[in-house]
Image (cartoon, rainbow, N blue to C red; front, side, top):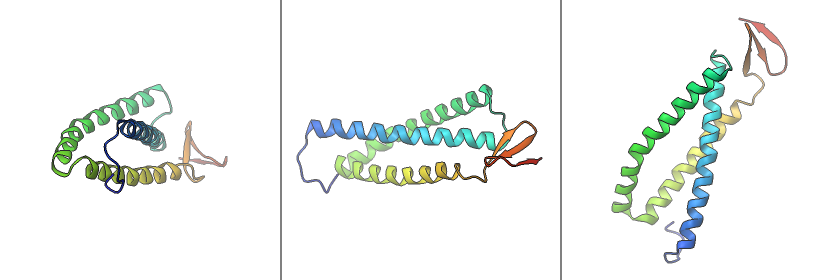
Amino acid sequence: APFIKTGPNMNLVYQAQILGGFGESLQYICAYIHAQRTAIRIGYPDDIRTNSVVSSTFFATLCLGSLGTAPLAGYLVSVYGYRRTSAAVSGFLLFWVAVLSILCASDWKGYRRIKSGRNYQKIDGATTQQ
């Protein structure tokens, strides 16, 4: 980051990679859970087939995303330098963590419905017919 006034240090690079990997894994888990809950909420059955479709779609999207972001990251590093680029990417990732956290937290509210056969059952136990 440009505001840290230290010279290049491999230990700091390793620590940054560990923290970045941990943060990205939390984002992936939250996004996957949100996608799975959304699929079930809009009417897909809660079974292995739905899980397989969501997992396959999620993995394919990650692969397509990495296809474009690797050249973009290389370009940004060559133009702006490693420190500025890493600060910008960190800021974007923090913003994205906030967005995904809000999306995941909204799934925990009691007014969301869980499909139970032909009836829809609210989390608090009341059932309604569709």
